[in-house]
Structures are given as C-alpha cells and as structure tokens.
Amino acid sequence: MRGKKVSQMKILIRDNKKITRKKLFENKEKFHKEQAKLPFEEKIKILIRLQEIANSIHKSTSGGKLGVWKIPSKSRSK
Amino acid sequence: MKKTIAVLNQLRKKGLIKNYAIGGGIATIFYVEPFFTYDLDVFIIPSGTVKKQNLILLSPIYNYLQAKGYKWKGEHILIEGVPVQFIPADEFEKEAVARAKAVEYEGVKTKVMAPEYLVALLLRAGRKKDMEKTEKLLEQTKIDRRKLRAILRKYGLTRKFDLL
Image (cartoon, rainbow over all chains, first blue to last red; front, side):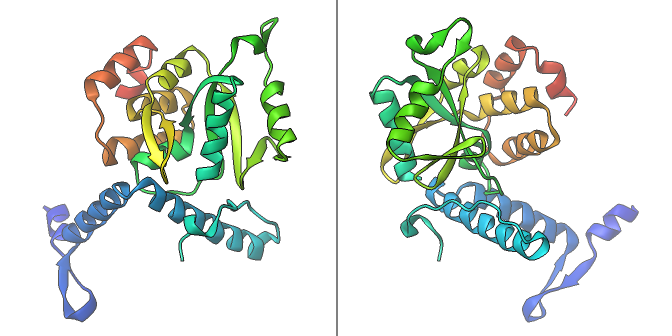
C-alpha cells in the first residue's frame, strides 16, 4: 500500500507539469530503450563523448590522462 | 572506427586471420544504450600456420600492423586511433565468431557477436561489469530465448543464468 502511494506521488517538473514517480521511472526506461535503438555510428559518437568526459574528470582529479579514441571528426559528435 | 574495421578486414583478406568478430563492450553497445568503454575486443580465429606447439603466435599479425606504422599502447595496438585487443578465440568463442551478425559501419562490412552469445560469454566471465552488461542486453534488446537457452545448456551456464 505504502509503495503504491509513493509511486503515485506527484513531482513538479518544467512548465508546471506534474508527473508521478511511476511515470518518471517509466520515461527513464523508455529513454534507455530508445538510446539502444540508435544507429551504431551514433552510439560510437556518444561513446567518444563519454571518453572525453571521463578523461577531463580524470585529469582534474588525478592529473593523469585516460584514453580517447582518435578517429576522424566525421565520426565525432559536435 | 571505419578505418579500424577496414584494417581488420585486410587482415582476413591477407590470410593473417581466418575470421573475426567484434565482442566485448563495443559489441554490447551495438545492441544497447551507449556506455563508457575503452578498447575494441576483436575475437580472432588465427590462420592454421600460426599455431605452434600449443602456442598461438600472433606475431604475424602484429608484424604486419607494426610495418604499417601502428603502435602498441599497453596491451593494445592502436589502429587508426582505436585501441584494439586481439583475443584468439577458444572453442566457445569460435562458435560465437562463426555465428556473428554481419553489419555495416559507415558502409564498411564487419561482424558483431550475436546478443545470445554475448550474454553467454559475459555470464561465463562473471565479473560485476559483465553482469551489468548482461542485464542491459536482456532489458534493451531482443534476445532469442530458445537460442540463448541452447547455448547456455551446451556450455554449462544455465544455472548461472537462472541465478540472475
């Protein structure tokens, strides 16, 4: 019962729109599934962006470098 | 990565490897949402001539790549900016290579292990990060459950899968 109450709890998001916690998590899952359907090339662009983010965090915390794929700019995200 | 794949295809064309398929994290990304990973795992079936006294010699491949100017970086060889790890396939992986999915990357043909084999191989590896990939595959892509069950049975992984 308590779980049901929590899942129906409303959250105020942008433009005064309200959604339930349940819906929020459903949307999250939908987003992950949509990302999974992206073309392979698009996913590799995102991967390189992730490598760049990881590299900059690593550089600022430990001063070291992590690898980032050095492939032509056409295959990189903007 | 297009150029990296073209080099892998050259290795096959030149007879330095019999066959190959992309496995590991990058193969998983083919089927699920992108996640952080670094290397490109390439499972290879070496050509018959490179087997010597139960030792798999990858030196012909490395010599060829080094002659083309590709350099080592730790355990990887950097091919066109991508760190590649060549893994000689065992019996299980050979089957996964043989049944890999033919795909194209920016117009270049390559092969990616099928999701059912990826799940089974990740289960066999059994590390925490492998389990996370297994869960993503089961949640985010279409898995042929009958095919998966048959693979798991063949390689004694059914119990491990059922404990997930």
